[in-house]
Length: 198
Image (cartoon, rainbow, N blue to C red):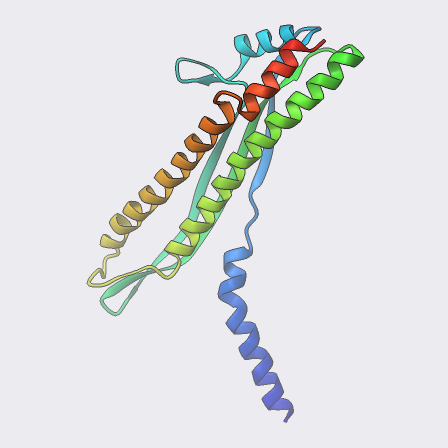
């Protein structure tokens, strides 16, 4: 009876290993501030325009970037190739403005409302990146390509799948920004309140 119970416990532990393997990593999230100056909301926003991170032809208020690397193991099985290990290492960096000097009390309050809204916006981008990595992980682990004993075809197939997942993530980001930064959008409202405030 004890042996039977132990076998059941071991079976339960082994059965939960794949689920645990998918959930064991954590993204590293860091904030990289850039210095701005000004004593009013309008001056702070003007400084953001001059010093913000480059984005296309102009500059952004803030942006989210990431570095993603994988520990991946390809294993020949029979005449096929299987991905048996696929662990991500994800570092997300949020670049955000930070006043260089202490702000007057009224400006400090409106700045805090502005930067909180901007941070919340960037965190949404961070979440879509994490969701993308989870989707890549779920798609990749156990991926098998037949007639591939040298594990070459599987790399081509994996690259194709990852390209599709990555494209969806980038489109989600563009769609979100379009809503947030469009007329009457959240970011536009935050900017107006900051610039028109004290």
